Image 1: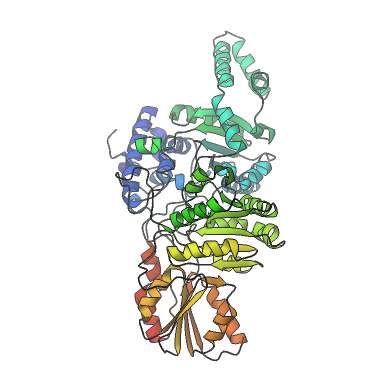
Image 2: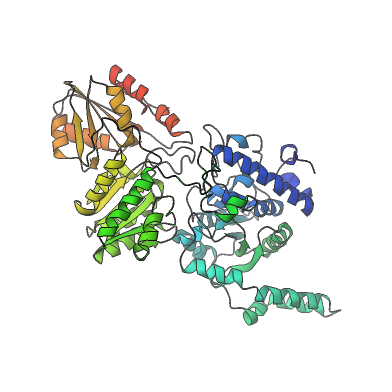
Length: 614
């Protein structure tokens, strides 16, 4: 088998003609391809290296796209992409106009469901399975879900419903003890207890061998035991929670042994009922640095892997500034507690976890629970701070309204990765937190543009604000701050103009450069509620241009424009913001495409017209 297998084969169709040995060779080639591409383009490395054999086995047993394979989370699908006709374009992974780093149905018929956020696969696969049953289709729906995603409540809602059905649904648990940070909680301990208990499996195999070797009566007795539905397991090993929920449980099995995976999946396929397959894998397998430290190699930056920085740490960023400032404040205030949804490293909270472990809480990938938990801490007299990516905060909308806002609980949200995020694309762009939070009563939103402002805003959010206080900040580092004054409110730079340009967050740096000394500039930092003084000063201008790195619909610009016209404003008001979903591209290219870069701002200010991105 030569090194051009991936290139020359008709995949996934030809997979079934390979021997197990040839599949193992293919897996080595796939790993090399993934490592070479991710170290160059950036992306999710450890999770993909851990699922190579599992993915090959799935595609040998099931027949996509007739069988629906739903991945959770979709960042573990690089092997799937290579096996489903995307070898030639794999070098474009996460690049503008290239392959998505996640599943995208518009990209391939083999991508059954979009999958940028966790815990969704079982519900989606169950929906597919029910639709196939209603259509008289006997194919299978297969959900491949990591143990990290099982810390999210939606996974259990899906299990609860799917287990009661008679559908052809198979749930494959990829168990590697990791999500982004190491898995926490009772479920992680439960899976570990199953993973570590081989007594049942060993005894089962010995009994089956004895029966197979017993002439005449062996095979009938074995069939009887199988048909007795886990009679042997009931004696030797208690039933799993998955069986209690209606699934047939198979496993745990070695997720790097193709023959064993295939044998188990073929058995699951024949059962034609809800089946739960427990697969043990090693995250980062085949790349030693990722095996040793899978958390650090969960995601490689677009700049690639730096051997001089083996932990893949970013030490100069808004996230680091937030985490260190919160840690310093907590040194003096014992009420401060920090919460993460399985992302302490990604949100800069690892410092807090070390310095104040008794006040640090990793709740797993459970943003809804995190918000309600924070509200409970607030009720108990604490100052809870939940650090979370903008796109993941979306999942807690109900809890923010019902559990925090209704009784005006004081919780602080550190909203990381706000605005454009680059290669992660549509599912991770932080463009909807502002319009979402603006609809929630008792909410204040800060959007700093520098590290110093971030520190000021965090203090204000903790000590000068009631209710929900959100501090949103972008991925990456601050821009040049020379000559820029810091504030936690607003700052007006007067140049004697009747034209006013307004913005907030990191793009105010572009606006200052674009406006020069010809146009007055208003920098908002506390962006909501808009101060009455801001509305009053805006009334003095005949032209106003508002730029925001957020959704234009329902954003701060529309809100301010509405207030001005309600007060009798007679001038023109032009808003430049983001419309719709934004595909992957570098942050700078996103800025250019949505006219938020310096040159586009300069053109808009000079021409006096709105530009609509297409």
